Image (cartoon, rainbow, N blue to C red):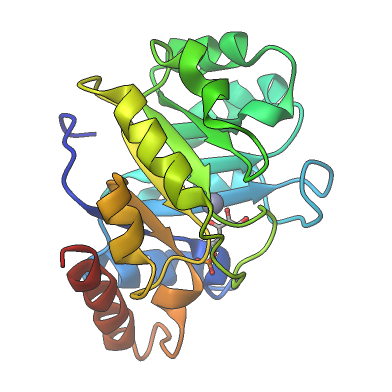
Length: 228
Ligand code: DX5
Ligand code: ZN
C-alpha cells in the first residue's frame, strides 16, 4: 500500500459483482476508476449470509492492482488471520462485536504485516473504538446492518461518523463507511468525515464486464457527489 492519505477513495464491493467472474470484474472496476477493492467475507453465523473464504480471496489477489480491502463478517476471526494474510489481503477488518478479545485480534492482524481495521455495527456506539485507536489503521462504520447489499442507508450513522472523525484527530486512521452509499448519501458521509466509501449496488448497477463503462459512470457520479 502507498503512504497514508485522507483523500477520497471509492471502494466498490464485489458482493454486487458477478460471482462467476470475479477476476474480470475486479479488472473492470479498477480500469473504471476504483481506488480500492472491497471484499466481503461472510460466514452465515456472524451475519445471516455466506459468501466465500480465504481461497477465493487468494484467487482474486493477482487481479487486484490497487488495494485489497477485506471486510470480515465472521466469528471467530483469530483462527483465520494467517489464511487471509497468506491470501494477500492488504487491509483486514474485523468487527468489534465478533469476539471478546478485539485487541488481540488487531495486534495479530498487524503482526502479519497487514493493515488492521475494526468495524462497528449500527447498534454499537462509537466509544467502543476509543481504546483501540493505537491498534488500528482503519475504522469501518456500517451504515446498514451487515449481511446483504442493496439495503437502505441508516441516516443516524452520520453523527457517529462525525464523532469518530473528531476522536481520530491527527492519527493516521482511515474512516470507512459501508452500506447504502450512493450519489445521494456520498456527500453526507464525506462531509461527516469519511475518506473511504464502500459502494456495492451503486457501482455495479446497470453495468457488466462487457458494459464496464457503466461502472465508470457510477464511480464517477459517487466521487463527484462526495466532492461537492
Ligand atoms: C454489507 C457489506 C457491504 C455491501 C454494501 O454487509 O459489508 O460491503 O456490499 O452494499 P451496498 O453498497 O449495495 O449497500
Ligand atoms: Zn463490506
